[in-house]
Length: 146
Image (cartoon, rainbow, N blue to C red):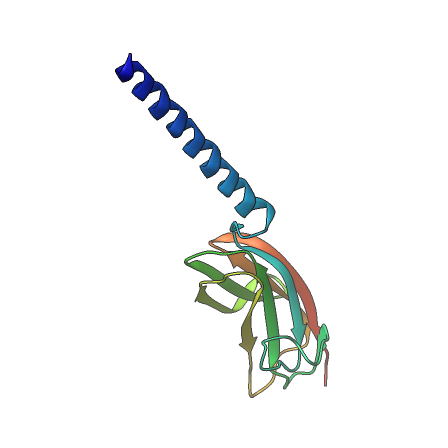
């Protein structure tokens, strides 16, 4: 009889521990401490960027001698993720293609830029941002004639 009572007590103890563990997991989820996968939330373009990597002079029309900045906003967490910025001119001619490895935990910004000291040709351009080799956002912009 004592052995059966001991097994019943052990069974109830194990059940109680499972309930407590499940309650702790639910508490983590509802308080926002669980992690969400990283995602691109915004891409901004401009002529200047601040120390926080946010655009300070936003525009989608540039002059030939401008340095063109992109600020890529992400949200979520990842031990490692790759952001890639592919800049193209009119018919798809690649102007620049560069990558940054990030390890975000929450909201973050990553900066990319292109410059051409002898001046960009006038025309229509596109920036496509990839997250882990998947297209995430695109931005169209223009370089106006002098």
